[in-house]
Amino acid sequence: MGTGRPRKEIDGEQVRKLAALHCSVEEIGDILGCGRDTIYRHHREDLDQGRAEGKMRLRTMQFKSAQHGSASMLIWLGKQILGQKDQQEIVAVDEEEKRLSEEEVDGLLNKITGNENGRNGTGEEASSSSSTGE
Image: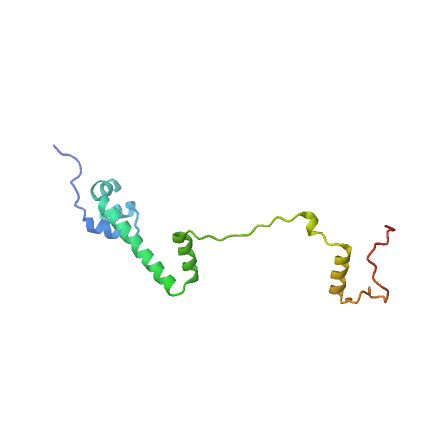
């Protein structure tokens, strides 16, 4: 009557251990010589338990790394578990506020050129008005 493939015995403990190593269902099937449907149909609980154990082991290792002073792991765990995040402050500045007065520009130029006494390098007083006749 049954002309299909003979039933392959799959060890649930092997499924659990492979799942704990984060193997995909396809990989587990390849290793154990069966299809993914067989794993899902007959060993879903073993698969879920193994995945949970693998996550627990990984999390334990992360916490140990953080406890030993890994700054990047502390930051990552803080973001994942505590909901912390990097914040960038964005400040809008009015264009008029960014402009310097002529006196401020002259003061900065004098400071840069070393003429802090208000001389323009020729011995004459530096003028704060332009020579266009304004």
